[in-house]
Amino acid sequence: MSRLKLAASLVALVFTFEPVLADVVGKDKTTGCGFRQPPEWQPYTANWTGPCIGGVADGLGVLRVYNQSQAVAVFYGRMLEGKMVVGVIDTANGYLAGRFNDSTLVKSDDRETFIAGFRDASAAANAAREVFESQGNVASAKYYRDKAKQLEAQMD
Image (cartoon, rainbow, N blue to C red; front, side):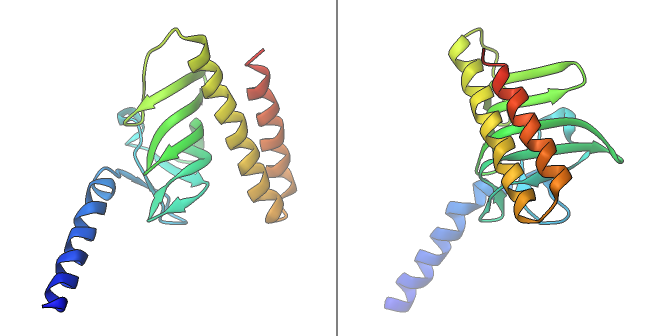
């Protein structure tokens, strides 16, 4: 009887994680870490620099989106279970900052929402800087240090 309970518990555990993995539509080709991209990014490739928990992006980090070798957008911020939660998207047309629902920016005029987005974005850029510093990649570490300062300056 205890084997039956153990098997049922394992099945329940698998179904508990299934919705998170089912929502993943993008995957970093190098690390295999999954994430949910906004629909307009789905034709492109992307890579995630940040924590990967249970096979999905989770925590502060940077999601860079490429059209071939050209970066078209960069998300700096916090991911939760593979989805953008709060941060900033840096595009050719400027910054999109705030909170996200299912990796889609939620429209808001609330100043505190913008500040929270830029605060997490700056922290995410600093987290990426630390990753590249630990790898001895001085140029990328400098890039992300400078980006963190730029993002922080947006809160003034």
